[in-house]
Length: 180
Image (cartoon, rainbow, N blue to C red; front, side, top):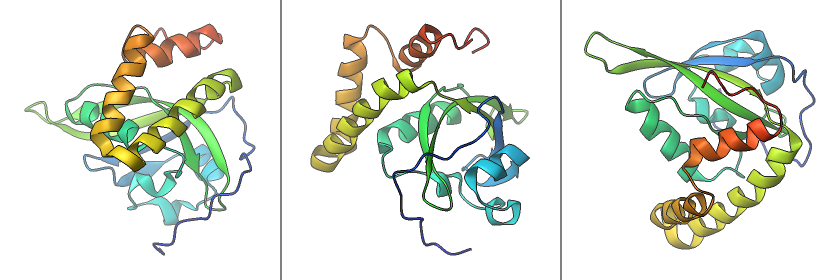
């Protein structure tokens, strides 16, 4: 597979938002399983996805600090719910929220992650997109440390951490987050 990343276009990928996108990765984020919804929405074939790093879908509008926080939590065995803007093979975007099942070896070390991704209501995107834009701006000028500091201060002002912030945004839109 080519290492060339798709050029983002400002066009949302139309998909059946009642469906759940699923994929499984190993402990370092290499794709080991994708469902048909994942294939359809991402516009990649199964063969193009298998064995690739999951960040093949990373949209440049996503701040690095969100993925650092996500992976820091997953590697500790903690579920992490993130709102993510993904990039399709043709450069379109789609917003999802993640929820993970974490598989561990006998010693409790995470060995793989099964991600279930659902659509994100537009009012949540309207809150998250400007935050992510600011985080990218902070990362560009001050690096990850400054981005992390900005995110923590933003979330403290909202009265919690990233997960509680996301859960509140989603539950305010009628999304059931009780199983998280």
